[in-house]
Length: 479
Image (cartoon, rainbow, N blue to C red; front, top):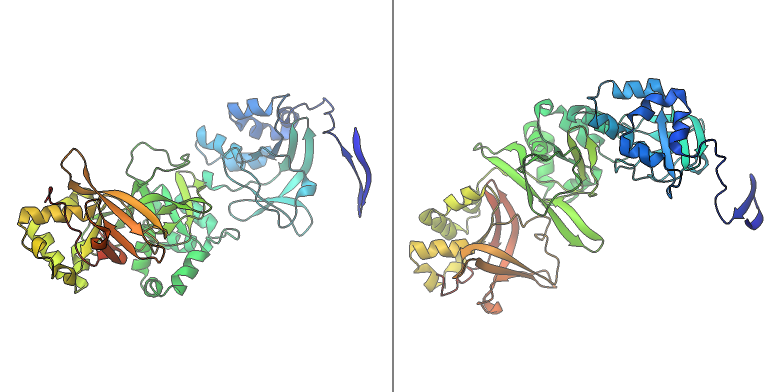
Protein backbone atom coordinates (compact mmCIF):
# COMPACT_ATOMS: atom_id res chain seq x y z
CA UNK A 1 0.00 0.00 0.00
CA UNK A 2 1.21 3.50 -0.83
CA UNK A 3 1.82 5.66 2.23
CA UNK A 4 2.86 8.81 0.39
CA UNK A 5 2.90 9.64 -3.33
CA UNK A 6 4.69 11.79 -5.88
CA UNK A 7 7.79 13.06 -4.14
CA UNK A 8 9.55 14.73 -7.05
CA UNK A 9 13.34 14.72 -7.40
CA UNK A 10 15.73 15.93 -10.09
CA UNK A 11 15.80 12.57 -11.80
CA UNK A 12 12.48 10.90 -10.93
CA UNK A 13 9.55 10.42 -8.59
CA UNK A 14 9.49 8.58 -5.26
CA UNK A 15 6.48 6.74 -3.78
CA UNK A 16 6.66 5.50 -0.17
CA UNK A 17 5.10 2.10 0.58
CA UNK A 18 4.37 0.25 3.81
CA UNK A 19 6.78 -2.56 2.94
CA UNK A 20 9.04 -4.08 0.33
CA UNK A 21 7.50 -5.25 -2.92
CA UNK A 22 7.12 -9.03 -3.03
CA UNK A 23 9.70 -11.02 -4.96
CA UNK A 24 8.74 -12.22 -8.41
CA UNK A 25 9.29 -15.82 -7.35
CA UNK A 26 11.80 -16.53 -10.09
CA UNK A 27 14.74 -16.03 -7.71
CA UNK A 28 13.36 -16.44 -4.18
CA UNK A 29 16.81 -16.38 -2.53
CA UNK A 30 20.25 -14.94 -3.15
CA UNK A 31 21.66 -18.44 -3.56
CA UNK A 32 19.13 -19.26 -6.28
CA UNK A 33 20.18 -16.05 -8.06
CA UNK A 34 23.83 -17.08 -7.88
CA UNK A 35 23.08 -20.60 -9.10
CA UNK A 36 21.19 -19.22 -12.09
CA UNK A 37 24.41 -17.64 -13.37
CA UNK A 38 26.74 -20.31 -14.87
CA UNK A 39 29.63 -17.86 -14.93
CA UNK A 40 29.47 -17.61 -11.12
CA UNK A 41 29.49 -21.35 -10.41
CA UNK A 42 33.03 -21.59 -8.99
CA UNK A 43 32.45 -18.82 -6.47
CA UNK A 44 29.05 -20.27 -5.55
CA UNK A 45 30.57 -23.72 -4.94
CA UNK A 46 33.30 -22.16 -2.77
CA UNK A 47 30.78 -20.71 -0.32
CA UNK A 48 30.97 -22.64 2.99
CA UNK A 49 27.99 -24.82 3.81
CA UNK A 50 26.71 -22.71 6.69
CA UNK A 51 26.72 -19.59 4.52
CA UNK A 52 25.08 -21.41 1.59
CA UNK A 53 22.28 -22.51 3.90
CA UNK A 54 21.81 -18.96 5.17
CA UNK A 55 21.72 -17.52 1.65
CA UNK A 56 19.10 -20.12 0.65
CA UNK A 57 16.53 -19.29 3.34
CA UNK A 58 13.33 -18.12 1.67
CA UNK A 59 11.92 -16.77 4.92
CA UNK A 60 15.10 -14.93 5.90
CA UNK A 61 14.64 -11.74 7.87
CA UNK A 62 17.97 -10.48 6.56
CA UNK A 63 18.94 -8.84 3.30
CA UNK A 64 22.18 -9.89 1.65
CA UNK A 65 24.58 -8.31 -0.81
CA UNK A 66 27.01 -10.61 -2.62
CA UNK A 67 29.97 -9.38 -4.67
CA UNK A 68 30.46 -12.43 -6.91
CA UNK A 69 33.60 -12.88 -9.06
CA UNK A 70 33.20 -14.60 -12.42
CA UNK A 71 34.73 -18.04 -12.87
CA UNK A 72 37.90 -16.63 -14.42
CA UNK A 73 38.27 -14.03 -11.68
CA UNK A 74 37.60 -16.52 -8.88
CA UNK A 75 39.98 -19.06 -10.40
CA UNK A 76 42.73 -16.44 -10.36
CA UNK A 77 41.95 -15.57 -6.73
CA UNK A 78 41.81 -19.16 -5.49
CA UNK A 79 44.51 -20.84 -7.60
CA UNK A 80 47.38 -20.04 -5.24
CA UNK A 81 45.49 -20.90 -2.05
CA UNK A 82 45.43 -24.10 -0.01
CA UNK A 83 42.04 -25.78 -0.26
CA UNK A 84 39.43 -25.65 2.46
CA UNK A 85 39.47 -23.03 5.16
CA UNK A 86 41.26 -20.17 3.42
CA UNK A 87 39.19 -20.50 0.24
CA UNK A 88 35.95 -20.42 2.19
CA UNK A 89 37.24 -17.50 4.27
CA UNK A 90 37.95 -15.66 1.03
CA UNK A 91 34.36 -16.25 -0.12
CA UNK A 92 33.00 -14.98 3.21
CA UNK A 93 34.73 -11.65 2.59
CA UNK A 94 32.35 -10.94 -0.30
CA UNK A 95 29.00 -11.37 1.49
CA UNK A 96 27.30 -8.67 3.60
CA UNK A 97 24.13 -8.78 5.73
CA UNK A 98 22.79 -5.61 4.12
CA UNK A 99 21.08 -4.63 0.90
CA UNK A 100 23.37 -2.33 -1.08
CA UNK A 101 22.14 -1.43 -4.55
CA UNK A 102 24.50 0.25 -6.98
CA UNK A 103 22.59 3.52 -6.86
CA UNK A 104 23.53 3.94 -3.19
CA UNK A 105 27.26 3.85 -3.92
CA UNK A 106 29.14 7.14 -4.18
CA UNK A 107 32.76 8.05 -4.83
CA UNK A 108 33.34 8.56 -1.11
CA UNK A 109 31.10 5.86 0.33
CA UNK A 110 31.77 4.89 3.92
CA UNK A 111 33.09 1.37 4.56
CA UNK A 112 30.28 -1.20 4.57
CA UNK A 113 30.00 -4.36 6.60
CA UNK A 114 30.84 -6.31 8.51
CA UNK A 115 31.09 -9.11 5.98
CA UNK A 116 30.67 -12.75 6.90
CA UNK A 117 34.43 -12.72 7.55
CA UNK A 118 33.98 -9.82 9.99
CA UNK A 119 35.83 -7.29 7.84
CA UNK A 120 34.62 -4.14 6.07
CA UNK A 121 34.52 -3.34 2.35
CA UNK A 122 35.25 -0.04 0.69
CA UNK A 123 33.02 0.87 -2.27
CA UNK A 124 33.40 3.74 -4.71
CA UNK A 125 32.48 5.06 -8.14
CA UNK A 126 35.23 5.12 -10.79
CA UNK A 127 36.07 8.10 -12.97
CA UNK A 128 34.00 6.44 -15.69
CA UNK A 129 30.99 6.45 -13.36
CA UNK A 130 30.96 2.71 -12.66
CA UNK A 131 30.38 1.34 -9.16
CA UNK A 132 33.43 -0.53 -7.89
CA UNK A 133 34.90 -2.35 -4.92
CA UNK A 134 38.29 -1.24 -3.55
CA UNK A 135 40.37 -4.27 -2.56
CA UNK A 136 43.05 -4.51 0.13
CA UNK A 137 45.73 -3.39 -2.33
CA UNK A 138 43.73 -0.23 -3.16
CA UNK A 139 42.77 -1.50 -6.63
CA UNK A 140 39.35 -0.55 -7.99
CA UNK A 141 37.39 -3.58 -9.23
CA UNK A 142 34.43 -2.39 -11.31
CA UNK A 143 31.09 -4.19 -11.38
CA UNK A 144 30.68 -6.10 -14.65
CA UNK A 145 26.95 -6.43 -13.95
CA UNK A 146 25.05 -4.84 -11.12
CA UNK A 147 21.82 -5.21 -9.21
CA UNK A 148 20.91 -8.83 -9.96
CA UNK A 149 17.93 -8.96 -7.63
CA UNK A 150 16.38 -11.82 -5.67
CA UNK A 151 13.81 -12.26 -2.94
CA UNK A 152 16.43 -11.91 -0.19
CA UNK A 153 19.08 -9.66 -1.66
CA UNK A 154 21.22 -8.54 -4.56
CA UNK A 155 24.26 -9.79 -6.48
CA UNK A 156 26.91 -7.62 -8.13
CA UNK A 157 29.21 -9.40 -10.59
CA UNK A 158 32.98 -8.73 -10.65
CA UNK A 159 35.05 -9.79 -13.66
CA UNK A 160 38.50 -9.14 -12.18
CA UNK A 161 40.26 -10.74 -9.19
CA UNK A 162 39.87 -9.05 -5.81
CA UNK A 163 43.06 -8.95 -3.71
CA UNK A 164 42.52 -9.81 -0.06
CA UNK A 165 45.20 -10.17 2.58
CA UNK A 166 43.52 -13.31 3.88
CA UNK A 167 44.94 -15.03 0.79
CA UNK A 168 48.48 -13.70 1.30
CA UNK A 169 51.46 -14.45 3.52
CA UNK A 170 53.05 -11.66 5.56
CA UNK A 171 55.50 -10.44 2.94
CA UNK A 172 52.82 -10.41 0.24
CA UNK A 173 50.46 -8.58 2.60
CA UNK A 174 53.06 -5.89 3.29
CA UNK A 175 53.70 -5.47 -0.44
CA UNK A 176 49.98 -5.04 -0.91
CA UNK A 177 49.64 -2.54 1.95
CA UNK A 178 52.58 -0.55 0.59
CA UNK A 179 50.11 0.61 -2.08
CA UNK A 180 47.45 1.43 0.52
CA UNK A 181 45.59 4.72 0.06
CA UNK A 182 42.87 4.19 2.68
CA UNK A 183 44.47 3.31 6.02
CA UNK A 184 47.69 5.33 6.13
CA UNK A 185 49.82 2.17 6.42
CA UNK A 186 51.86 2.41 3.22
CA UNK A 187 55.07 3.99 4.68
CA UNK A 188 55.36 1.46 7.53
CA UNK A 189 54.50 -1.48 5.25
CA UNK A 190 57.28 -0.49 2.84
CA UNK A 191 59.84 -0.03 5.62
CA UNK A 192 58.96 -3.26 7.40
CA UNK A 193 59.04 -5.29 4.19
CA UNK A 194 62.52 -3.95 3.43
CA UNK A 195 63.93 -5.42 6.66
CA UNK A 196 65.74 -8.74 6.38
CA UNK A 197 64.15 -11.90 7.71
CA UNK A 198 60.52 -10.93 7.14
CA UNK A 199 59.85 -13.93 4.90
CA UNK A 200 61.17 -16.28 7.63
CA UNK A 201 59.24 -14.73 10.51
CA UNK A 202 56.66 -16.86 12.30
CA UNK A 203 54.99 -13.81 13.86
CA UNK A 204 51.20 -13.93 13.62
CA UNK A 205 50.20 -10.63 15.27
CA UNK A 206 51.74 -7.62 13.52
CA UNK A 207 51.55 -4.08 14.91
CA UNK A 208 51.84 -1.69 11.97
CA UNK A 209 52.22 2.05 12.70
CA UNK A 210 49.96 4.35 10.70
CA UNK A 211 50.67 7.92 9.62
CA UNK A 212 49.33 9.22 12.95
CA UNK A 213 51.98 7.19 14.78
CA UNK A 214 54.76 8.85 12.80
CA UNK A 215 53.24 12.29 13.41
CA UNK A 216 53.26 11.52 17.15
CA UNK A 217 56.84 10.28 16.90
CA UNK A 218 58.05 13.53 15.33
CA UNK A 219 55.93 15.94 17.39
CA UNK A 220 56.60 14.50 20.85
CA UNK A 221 59.76 15.87 22.50
CA UNK A 222 60.24 12.59 24.40
CA UNK A 223 60.27 10.50 21.21
CA UNK A 224 61.88 12.87 18.71
CA UNK A 225 65.30 11.38 19.40
CA UNK A 226 63.94 7.92 18.59
CA UNK A 227 62.60 9.27 15.29
CA UNK A 228 66.01 10.69 14.42
CA UNK A 229 67.71 7.43 15.31
CA UNK A 230 65.29 5.40 13.16
CA UNK A 231 65.98 7.70 10.22
CA UNK A 232 69.77 7.44 10.51
CA UNK A 233 70.20 3.84 11.69
CA UNK A 234 68.49 1.25 9.49
CA UNK A 235 69.40 -1.62 11.85
CA UNK A 236 67.73 0.13 14.76
CA UNK A 237 64.68 0.93 12.62
CA UNK A 238 64.32 -2.76 11.76
CA UNK A 239 64.73 -3.61 15.46
CA UNK A 240 61.81 -1.29 16.22
CA UNK A 241 59.68 -3.07 13.64
CA UNK A 242 60.82 -6.49 14.92
CA UNK A 243 59.60 -5.42 18.37
CA UNK A 244 56.14 -5.02 16.78
CA UNK A 245 56.10 -8.54 15.29
CA UNK A 246 54.50 -10.80 17.87
CA UNK A 247 53.95 -14.49 18.49
CA UNK A 248 51.64 -15.54 21.31
CA UNK A 249 53.13 -17.45 24.21
CA UNK A 250 49.84 -19.40 24.30
CA UNK A 251 50.37 -22.41 22.05
CA UNK A 252 47.81 -23.84 19.67
CA UNK A 253 45.96 -20.59 18.88
CA UNK A 254 45.12 -19.97 15.21
CA UNK A 255 45.56 -16.21 14.84
CA UNK A 256 44.33 -16.19 11.25
CA UNK A 257 40.85 -16.56 12.77
CA UNK A 258 41.30 -15.25 16.34
CA UNK A 259 38.93 -12.42 17.25
CA UNK A 260 40.31 -11.17 20.53
CA UNK A 261 42.85 -11.43 23.31
CA UNK A 262 42.73 -11.69 27.05
CA UNK A 263 43.85 -9.03 29.49
CA UNK A 264 47.65 -9.16 29.83
CA UNK A 265 48.02 -11.87 27.19
CA UNK A 266 51.75 -12.15 26.50
CA UNK A 267 53.49 -12.16 23.14
CA UNK A 268 57.12 -12.84 22.33
CA UNK A 269 58.53 -10.37 19.83
CA UNK A 270 60.94 -10.98 16.96
CA UNK A 271 63.41 -8.56 18.58
CA UNK A 272 66.31 -9.95 20.60
CA UNK A 273 68.05 -7.75 23.16
CA UNK A 274 71.82 -7.13 22.87
CA UNK A 275 72.37 -9.78 25.57
CA UNK A 276 70.39 -12.28 23.49
CA UNK A 277 67.32 -12.21 25.74
CA UNK A 278 63.85 -12.72 24.31
CA UNK A 279 61.55 -9.73 24.69
CA UNK A 280 57.82 -9.63 25.32
CA UNK A 281 54.81 -7.32 25.12
CA UNK A 282 51.30 -7.79 26.49
CA UNK A 283 47.82 -6.99 25.25
CA UNK A 284 46.08 -4.68 27.69
CA UNK A 285 42.54 -3.29 27.56
CA UNK A 286 42.24 0.20 29.00
CA UNK A 287 38.84 1.59 29.92
CA UNK A 288 38.14 4.94 28.27
CA UNK A 289 35.02 7.04 27.76
CA UNK A 290 34.20 5.40 24.43
CA UNK A 291 34.83 1.85 25.65
CA UNK A 292 37.82 -0.40 26.16
CA UNK A 293 40.91 0.51 24.14
CA UNK A 294 43.25 -2.30 23.06
CA UNK A 295 46.92 -1.62 23.73
CA UNK A 296 50.04 -3.66 23.23
CA UNK A 297 52.17 -2.11 25.98
CA UNK A 298 52.41 1.51 24.78
CA UNK A 299 51.24 0.83 21.21
CA UNK A 300 47.59 1.90 20.95
CA UNK A 301 45.52 -0.09 18.45
CA UNK A 302 43.22 2.00 16.26
CA UNK A 303 40.56 -0.71 16.41
CA UNK A 304 39.85 -4.04 18.04
CA UNK A 305 39.04 -5.44 14.57
CA UNK A 306 42.34 -6.42 12.91
CA UNK A 307 43.24 -6.81 9.25
CA UNK A 308 43.55 -10.53 8.61
CA UNK A 309 46.22 -12.13 6.47
CA UNK A 310 46.72 -15.81 5.72
CA UNK A 311 48.67 -16.70 8.84
CA UNK A 312 47.60 -14.05 11.32
CA UNK A 313 46.41 -10.50 11.73
CA UNK A 314 47.64 -6.92 11.47
CA UNK A 315 46.70 -4.17 13.93
CA UNK A 316 47.21 -0.55 12.82
CA UNK A 317 48.62 1.31 15.84
CA UNK A 318 48.76 5.03 16.71
CA UNK A 319 51.82 4.79 18.97
CA UNK A 320 55.05 2.81 18.92
CA UNK A 321 56.96 0.69 21.41
CA UNK A 322 60.73 1.11 21.49
CA UNK A 323 62.87 -2.01 21.93
CA UNK A 324 64.67 -2.24 25.29
CA UNK A 325 68.46 -2.47 25.10
CA UNK A 326 69.40 -2.56 28.81
CA UNK A 327 68.35 -4.48 31.91
CA UNK A 328 66.51 -2.69 34.69
CA UNK A 329 69.68 -2.58 36.81
CA UNK A 330 71.65 -1.04 33.93
CA UNK A 331 68.93 1.60 33.49
CA UNK A 332 68.99 2.42 37.21
CA UNK A 333 72.78 2.72 37.18
CA UNK A 334 72.50 5.24 34.36
CA UNK A 335 70.02 7.32 36.40
CA UNK A 336 72.83 8.39 38.81
CA UNK A 337 70.46 8.94 41.78
CA UNK A 338 69.53 5.27 42.18
CA UNK A 339 72.74 3.64 43.41
CA UNK A 340 71.23 2.59 46.74
CA UNK A 341 68.48 0.48 45.17
CA UNK A 342 71.00 -1.03 42.74
CA UNK A 343 73.19 -2.11 45.67
CA UNK A 344 70.21 -3.69 47.44
CA UNK A 345 69.16 -5.60 44.30
CA UNK A 346 72.67 -6.96 43.85
CA UNK A 347 73.18 -7.88 47.52
CA UNK A 348 69.85 -9.72 47.90
CA UNK A 349 70.00 -11.72 44.66
CA UNK A 350 66.46 -10.66 43.76
CA UNK A 351 67.56 -10.45 40.13
CA UNK A 352 66.82 -14.19 40.02
CA UNK A 353 63.14 -13.38 40.59
CA UNK A 354 63.23 -10.81 37.80
CA UNK A 355 64.76 -13.37 35.43
CA UNK A 356 62.19 -15.99 36.41
CA UNK A 357 59.33 -13.65 35.48
CA UNK A 358 60.75 -13.15 31.94
CA UNK A 359 59.95 -9.47 31.71
CA UNK A 360 56.51 -9.53 33.35
CA UNK A 361 57.67 -7.16 36.07
CA UNK A 362 56.81 -3.64 37.15
CA UNK A 363 59.45 -2.55 39.67
CA UNK A 364 58.98 0.48 41.92
CA UNK A 365 62.46 1.94 42.39
CA UNK A 366 63.08 4.58 45.12
CA UNK A 367 65.66 7.32 44.47
CA UNK A 368 68.71 7.64 46.73
CA UNK A 369 67.41 10.60 48.75
CA UNK A 370 64.36 8.56 49.75
CA UNK A 371 66.54 6.17 51.78
CA UNK A 372 68.40 8.80 53.83
CA UNK A 373 65.86 9.07 56.63
CA UNK A 374 64.79 5.41 56.55
CA UNK A 375 66.83 4.08 59.45
CA UNK A 376 64.57 1.05 59.90
CA UNK A 377 64.86 -0.16 56.31
CA UNK A 378 68.58 0.63 56.12
CA UNK A 379 69.11 -1.61 59.16
CA UNK A 380 67.33 -4.57 57.57
CA UNK A 381 69.13 -7.87 57.11
CA UNK A 382 69.50 -9.26 53.60
CA UNK A 383 66.43 -11.46 54.16
CA UNK A 384 64.33 -8.49 55.26
CA UNK A 385 65.61 -6.31 52.42
CA UNK A 386 64.70 -9.00 49.91
CA UNK A 387 61.14 -9.01 51.29
CA UNK A 388 61.05 -5.23 51.01
CA UNK A 389 62.09 -5.41 47.35
CA UNK A 390 59.44 -8.07 46.66
CA UNK A 391 56.90 -5.57 48.03
CA UNK A 392 58.14 -3.16 45.36
CA UNK A 393 57.78 -5.75 42.59
CA UNK A 394 54.46 -6.12 40.75
CA UNK A 395 54.05 -9.22 38.53
CA UNK A 396 51.95 -7.46 35.90
CA UNK A 397 52.52 -5.72 32.59
CA UNK A 398 50.96 -2.55 34.00
CA UNK A 399 52.54 0.20 31.95
CA UNK A 400 52.10 2.22 28.81
CA UNK A 401 51.17 5.60 27.44
CA UNK A 402 52.24 8.67 29.36
CA UNK A 403 50.56 7.74 32.65
CA UNK A 404 50.83 4.00 33.14
CA UNK A 405 47.27 3.59 31.83
CA UNK A 406 45.95 5.29 34.96
CA UNK A 407 43.31 7.96 34.50
CA UNK A 408 43.04 10.88 36.97
CA UNK A 409 40.83 10.19 40.02
CA UNK A 410 41.22 6.41 39.77
CA UNK A 411 42.30 3.74 42.24
CA UNK A 412 43.89 0.46 41.17
CA UNK A 413 44.74 -2.50 43.39
CA UNK A 414 47.42 -5.02 42.36
CA UNK A 415 49.31 -7.88 43.95
CA UNK A 416 52.93 -7.42 44.88
CA UNK A 417 55.30 -10.41 44.90
CA UNK A 418 55.59 -10.30 48.71
CA UNK A 419 53.62 -13.14 50.39
CA UNK A 420 51.32 -12.10 53.21
CA UNK A 421 50.64 -14.05 56.43
CA UNK A 422 47.98 -16.13 54.69
CA UNK A 423 47.98 -17.79 51.29
CA UNK A 424 48.08 -14.63 49.20
CA UNK A 425 50.30 -11.64 48.55
CA UNK A 426 50.42 -8.11 49.92
CA UNK A 427 48.23 -5.89 47.77
CA UNK A 428 49.43 -2.48 46.68
CA UNK A 429 47.02 0.38 46.06
CA UNK A 430 47.82 2.79 43.22
CA UNK A 431 45.89 6.05 43.50
CA UNK A 432 46.03 8.75 40.84
CA UNK A 433 44.87 12.16 42.06
CA UNK A 434 42.81 14.61 39.97
CA UNK A 435 45.96 16.74 39.56
CA UNK A 436 47.80 13.81 37.96
CA UNK A 437 50.07 12.94 40.90
CA UNK A 438 50.15 9.21 41.63
CA UNK A 439 50.74 7.62 45.03
CA UNK A 440 51.34 3.97 45.95
CA UNK A 441 50.90 2.29 49.33
CA UNK A 442 48.92 -0.43 51.08
CA UNK A 443 46.06 -0.73 53.56
CA UNK A 444 48.35 -0.87 56.63
CA UNK A 445 50.16 2.35 55.72
CA UNK A 446 48.72 5.87 56.24
CA UNK A 447 48.30 7.67 52.93
CA UNK A 448 50.58 10.47 54.10
CA UNK A 449 53.44 7.94 53.97
CA UNK A 450 52.67 6.52 50.52
CA UNK A 451 55.33 6.82 47.81
CA UNK A 452 54.83 9.18 44.87
CA UNK A 453 55.63 8.23 41.26
CA UNK A 454 58.28 10.56 39.80
CA UNK A 455 58.86 8.94 36.41
CA UNK A 456 56.93 6.38 34.37
CA UNK A 457 57.79 3.44 32.18
CA UNK A 458 61.54 3.00 31.87
CA UNK A 459 61.48 -0.22 29.86
CA UNK A 460 64.23 -2.78 30.39
CA UNK A 461 64.81 -6.18 28.85
CA UNK A 462 63.70 -7.84 32.09
CA UNK A 463 60.91 -5.51 33.23
CA UNK A 464 59.63 -1.96 33.58
CA UNK A 465 60.60 0.66 36.16
CA UNK A 466 58.52 3.34 37.81
CA UNK A 467 60.74 5.68 39.85
CA UNK A 468 59.28 6.65 43.24
CA UNK A 469 60.37 9.22 45.82
CA UNK A 470 60.92 6.86 48.79
CA UNK A 471 60.48 3.22 49.81
CA UNK A 472 57.03 1.86 50.61
CA UNK A 473 57.10 0.74 54.26
CA UNK A 474 56.78 -3.02 54.64
CA UNK A 475 54.06 -4.33 57.02
CA UNK A 476 55.73 -5.05 60.37
CA UNK A 477 54.16 -8.51 60.59
CA UNK A 478 55.75 -9.54 57.27
CA UNK A 479 59.21 -7.94 57.19
